[in-house]
Image 1: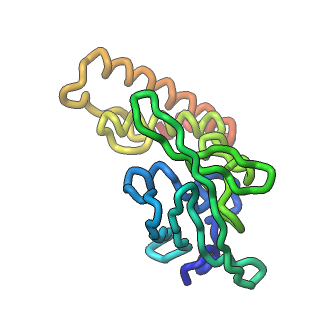
Image 2 (image 1 turned 30 degrees about the vertical axis):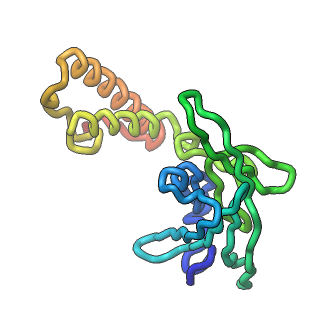
Length: 203
């Protein structure tokens, strides 16, 4: 247990989105002050309290070295390779780190790498963001639920509208209610077309 591919596979299902892959984020490591030359640490991923993967990271002066085991075709392979780090200046001072994608013929400067046989950028794995897989109705539902969360209303667009949150201006509240209603109507219209039933009878 502990290598990429032990237990569950290194992705959670067959959809090619960034959420289905283990990932490492150089910005998070920077915030945790882990990118100090000579530092060594480990990163683990969990699914339902089960470890689905882990790697060991050694920080060198201009790169990190990733060490892990990768399972492919029922065989384990030890992986150990460097990923270059690049630092750029921030507008308000300081430096920002980037990974240089180690995939062959890539070399993109990215903040996040995704794990397969090697850790590479989302362009190399042709990954989309979850929102890019949504249809119009799904997107409308997601946006409506975000408004509901901001309002403190019960989750679910079929549950109707709630009260104005304490401290929110009436103008803002009315604007959000209008947008919410438009999004709910769009979502239900798309559901009517998709499922061939009148979803408005449920609302």
